[in-house]
Image 1: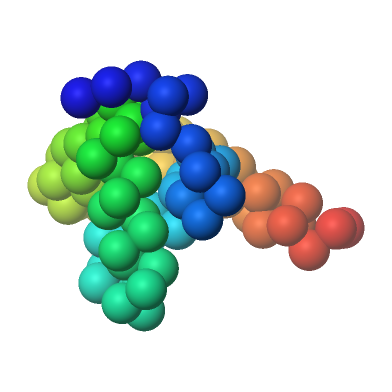
Image 2 (image 1 turned 180 degrees about the vertical axis):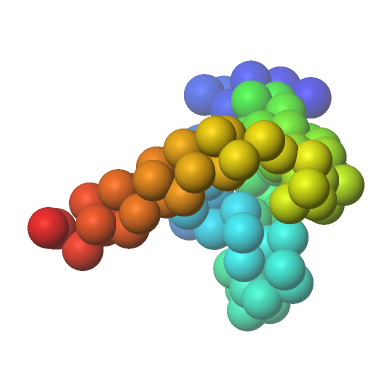
Length: 92
């Protein structure tokens, strides 16, 4: 596999675009054309290939967690962080 800098063309996804689409890709929600561009990018970009594999491993690990696995303090902290993130997303 070659470095992404050698593979860039005007029709290819950028690394940033791939990151933005990775959830839809993993949920099989990309239209066929976008899926092809996504996979073409992966074929030429080792960094994005690693990123996708990290996302898959993260999902596998998180699926194993149960609410009872967290202490009440960690649970509360995670909820506070999520609420803060949601508020930032709304611009407030």
